[in-house]
Image 1 (cartoon, rainbow, N blue to C red):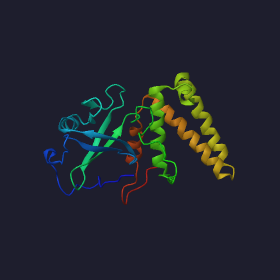
Image 2: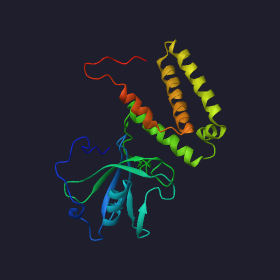
Image 3: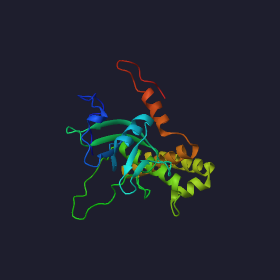
Image 4: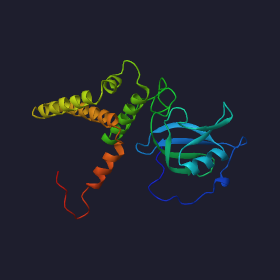
Length: 230
């Protein structure tokens, strides 16, 4: 996972013309999910695509195969809103921190990097609840956009809001029942089911999960202040 210090100001401000463009006038751009730190794709920028990225606040690249500018999401609608952009120490590569509105990969996968190499360590990845929820919500958004056949998420979206609400109620009840038993794994599974169905509900209602995050952030106890109840 690439984790440049986006939470603090860069040591230097670099003008775009000062980048070390290669002989083709390109620099590689690593696109990173601002919420999870996950690497989404590797693309290339030239001067024009970087200028459009800075001007519009969405990612633009240079397609080496088509020899043309490429606005991510132009056809799919899965644009990437730019939250930060930094160059490396040699000024010959970029990291673009984005908030994606859908899958990054043309295959429908959340990230272009989804093929494990045989013989390489599998790794545990980021198992934090926040990272897992971000990945889950991104997958739900991708399912809503593509509606692939055979997907349970597709079934729920096609069944409509009332079906989704019914499932949320059922899963909430199952969480309560599981919480009264000593089986922690069963409780964790039921909570996971409820969180999934709540994610589907948000997307079915068209409510940006960021609004829930904003509500949670607003309810944090200030330093030395009283904890809000409820």
